[in-house]
Image (cartoon, rainbow, N blue to C red; front, side, top):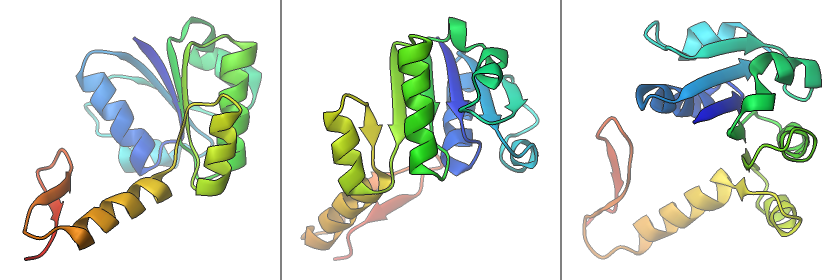
Length: 152
């Protein structure tokens, strides 16, 4: 799969590293080149592009015309929505997902046909599960082996 990830923060870089490790063709772009050295290991085999992900020329340099998937995970909900719409409707990318922090806006964009994920909503759900758990059990885990669990 050829995937383009817009936003090289914690989430975007982890997704890029995971997809690269799984053998996918990954390009990650960010407006700040420092993000690549900050979050990507030297072993990262994907491509990095410095530029604005809502700029069609930048997206073309990233290979959007051949992309199978596009993920928008910048810190800005509006920027993520715009980039997702451009990827889907202008370039015809089949699999497009965007992160929306605001759960109310996330529902609205989802109803409009965007594939969205709200980390705010997901964390609230996980925290609620942790609070309501009757015994110590893992509620969520991450690749590094740490777990968030409910206290006895």
